[in-house]
Image (cartoon, rainbow, N blue to C red; front, side, top):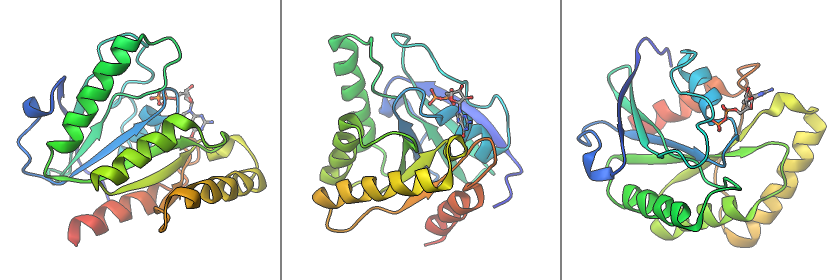
Length: 197
Ligand code: GDP
């Protein structure tokens, strides 16, 4: 997919205030520091489109971007900030649950996972929730340039084994690097493919 236009549209605290669900929507989410902003900038080829690492405790918003005037890319607030209070965590859960249940145009959630980290409870729980809600998702393993191919392969094997304890059918997954652009074409082709189905 050639991206000839990528624009920031709105930031909202509530799904019912988000842009009208007239275009298919792909949401990106993950633990803080997983590389979400870097991935969005890499995919769109626009450095600075998504702001890198918002600090914990700051108001967390649902950010909509419109790509090629034919799909929405959504940057969702991340989870797993160590220093966040119970109240903020509950507010995050409320916002995300409401978002997930109220976007009829949501085609797929891209759950970002750091290629170097063993399966984390917060990620596994989030993916289980998506399963319970019947929301399609894929796993995107980020920062794969930070270690050897063999190390990434070993991590993926562990990850998929852990997922198969929960899932009968494993979700699709991608390996990416914002540095080398690994996975860019695959992920964008996947989005185009889902769009055309
Ligand atoms: P976010 O908090 O999930 O939006 O994460 P950021 O995109 O801000 O990235 C967190 C840190 O990881 C930054 O220092 C990035 O430069 C770095 N980073 C993100 N993606 C990659 C990647 O693919 N490769 C490498 N080497 N570093 C990355």
